[in-house]
Length: 193
Image 1 (cartoon, rainbow, N blue to C red):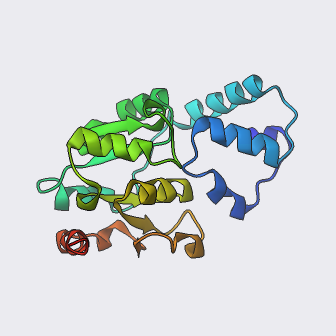
Image 2 (image 1 turned 90 degrees about the horizontal axis):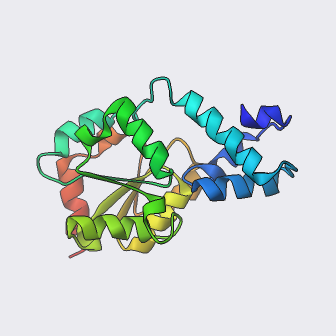
């Protein structure tokens, strides 16, 4: 909706550029890429208003997430790392009770540098007191995959929001979260030894 206000139609292939970006990177990139001549603070304010309205409704989990949680939560710690601002993470948590599913959550703005830098993932690993070789990160964005790989963890990319050819940098690629089982996780963790 924000871009329609500026009479800009975003090509489908461009959406993967934005997915997983920090808020500041999203606005900076979109203003430059589409030559938006609005005052940056006004553009950001409008964008936040659109996002707030969007998140007032139901926010869906990735397909298969709840069943993945049931399969692994008794055996593994689960953390959420998002490039979204802390304020947005708090709103989403209130809306869909993320704390039920995750042992800990981190907004990228809580780290020294946000995605695509590894800092948010390293911060999560430090919180859990785990080494990268004992960590599996599931990602659905190029920015997130790059950050996860730089952290030294094993990275699983999920098909769907990014062209498949761009996912090849991940260690593994899945089409659906149902493919990730305890055996799958165990095999990935063993591959580091």
